[in-house]
Length: 246
Image (tube, rainbow, N blue to C red; front, side, top):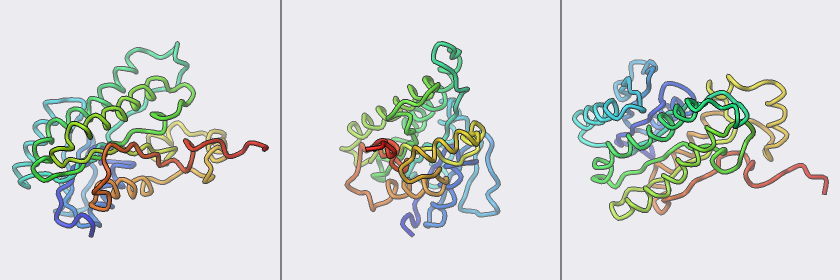
């Protein structure tokens, strides 16, 4: 029960890593505010509150933050999982609207939630965990828009960690590798999955629950001395190439 009696806000909570976080955090004793454009069924659990929130809208996030604060009296943890990915294309063929869409959701969504919940998190010396991507650390082909914006999320994480350390707010990020989320599997082919499995030192694609476990560590008191960390959770992808014939 690492999060017993804690109030946790999870964005992108309707599916994928966000949904896995809701389930894991609830199992650890937390009350969860599950924010998503398409909220998932809470299964009748009164300690999960599903709210329809578009994180790209500062007004929507502000309203949801106010409602959460009024209901629970504060917030202890924020997990930013909401994200989109646009079509994989060579950089010269990417529509500028794809950059804007990534910017609005993947970056400004984090800006909006951290700004609106900052005061409540500071009151409780809370924790923020942002979901970036291994694409923030190493380049993947045909993902210039997604990579650029996730790189900004990693940089923002470090900046917030420095700015808010004096208030006791810890800010970290995880950088998942290829994970079986609805967003990722929509672009996965058998050929790509085989290639990824060869390239990952641990030899496989990962499950959302595995990423949620790392997020739980950064959200809990187990990482009380950790802030400003951008943690790869990628099976060793960013560590190096596992298959050179040396």
